[in-house]
Image (cartoon, rainbow, N blue to C red; front, side):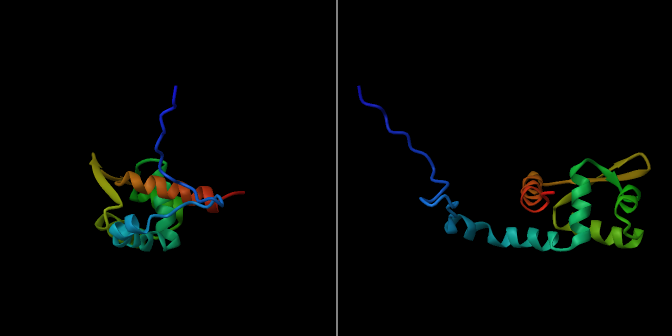
Length: 117
């Protein structure tokens, strides 16, 4: 009895390096560049890191990051405009959270690659 061939996507080259599809990248290059620009500021990166742990108010983020209230508001406005975070009013407080699940995966990959102790 013959075995059926299984077709799998090639994820590594013969030398163990990942294979990158330039064609796929070309379709999303602009979007990825915008996200990476947002992550390129240390304080915005830290804000997003805190939001990965759950919803936070402006006051909570200010306390966690030592960023001034006015600067925090500017960062949050930009991140919200770029679609990376969202806000929700609960009572008298505005809570911020991650809006795009892909950002969770990207931040996890950054932490796994660059934040080893």
